[in-house]
Image 1: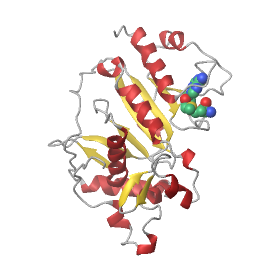
Image 2: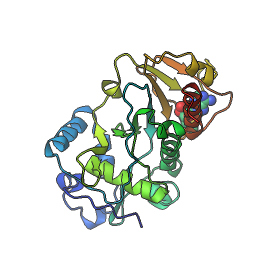
Image 3: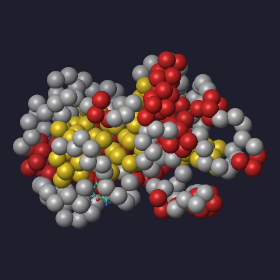
Image 4: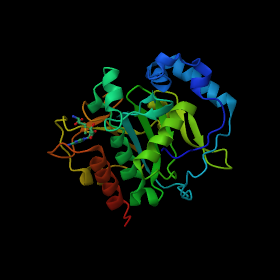
Length: 280
Ligand SMILES: C[S@@+](CC[C@H](N)C(=O)[O-])C[C@H]1O[C@@H](n2cnc3c(N)ncnc32)[C@H](O)[C@@H]1O
């Protein structure tokens, strides 16, 4: 049973889709449907959602005390192609995964092996658990799903540690488009407009990571020689296969002679900055 976050307000399901006929009940819809809506339609939904200014509250979603990051440089992460797809399984909307929804996915002619939300969960834990994050040096974290939905996670959010609770949170986010801390107006997680570049500092340098890049760099040296005046944005894939998009990437690098997991890459990036900024 997924942790019952109590979210008020209408769901996209209620707003966009009439009650399904019984024989349609197991069809993938709702947010996967939203995910397929390109550009304008998603932006319309985001605008509409913003206009509503609903104070959705998630009892129990803890946050860390925000650290005063004034004037100190921080790192920006973009996690691309995250596999976060919601489907209606029985009566519930769930984030689909290869272990729990094998039969369901096969019935939909989908390859269960492609449904790996555990990758983005591990990746986010790697970032948010790091001493870098605890020292308040995360400037921003953006996640883009395989379907093109972009959302921001505030640096002081505590990511649910169990996979079930993480999936419950993601499912609610993708249906409600934002999640707000209890008693506060601040949106801790928020679906935002594409492209991600509109949210990045103008002078930032976008570094894309891929095993397939010919440019093998020593990450510690790479980070050590970067200027603190240029915010660095690291783009890492949160998918099982494929390569990140090179759109708007300023440097496309490999950081190891071996193919690594996204979480391992993120650990390395965080460690490189911890060395640089003497965070122990
Ligand atoms: C499981 S991998 C995806 C595999 C994909 N074939 C690739 O290498 O891009 C997840 C992400 O980790 C990063 N990654 C994995 N190995 C890497 C390496 N040796 N150098 C740089 N980035 C790497 C990439 O950003 C990749 O998208």
